[in-house]
Image (cartoon, rainbow, N blue to C red; front, side, top):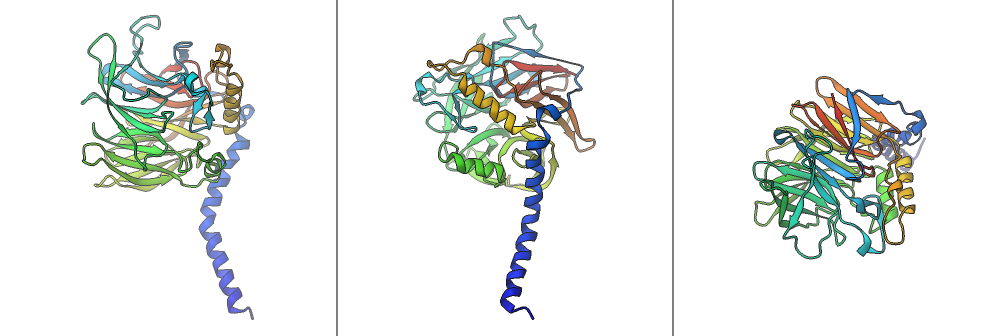
Length: 394
């Protein structure tokens, strides 16, 4: 007869295996993509009626892009300094004074490409202290003219808030406040609830600048160190609460009044949450993907657009190559600006499920955001390390 101690150990082992089985299955599915999605194995898909690269040699390394459909323009979040400074991927150039700052751009996609009105930088005013601007996620509340930006400032990541004035020839963003908080450790993406309330994702708990090996382990083991924080800047003091956790919490988007979508990059899925009255989030389902999602967007036709990276090893290789291009003065030659890692864009609706729109290994690389003007049938894709943006029409 087995001893009581042996039976107890067996029972504990069974419980541990049962508890870890979903995690093991999830890691197997996600890590399989490292082999399955080698660029030579990927299909070439393009369901757009037309698509082409625009703004080449004018903007590059654009992480986010949002469509303001009412005014037919996009706000692009771009950073040529990403080649030297990327807190998510672990690029920290020692000569900080040579790292160029990023910019936000107004792109009027209905204007002719060669028109002076098509592209204009947003100028900044009243920024406090040492100016350091390395933007990721950006959001704009049109009703209050409030602009929110996840800024991976060299002295520490934060969310910067501006009032955007579009009434003059030049767009000017006047700085109104900076949000630095222990629960906003690694801000990545934003989704607005109002001009004073928003969700912000923190992609990791362990920061690459603090412990590179630990951050990589958090990514590849699928540890849910990433969070979604609810922020209310109208309250005094400011209210910040962690309302959800996910492995590598990346893009976030409001699907409707009751549903929030969050991209879990290292889990290769988009998680859907029910939003409660106090703005807490409860996960209700997920959308499994065959690639690693980055940013999310929703548009007026009710669909969710997902963009991401099919093959992380190729993406990592691109980053290493970009570092090798850096000259002594910190500049990166123009011949190094082209991204060489694949892009995957999908559309999801509750009625029709998931549809792949665009997969490319050669035309446009490192795609991280897709956004669409549903009224005009035009959309954009931004590339984290790409030269220009992809503009498409249905």
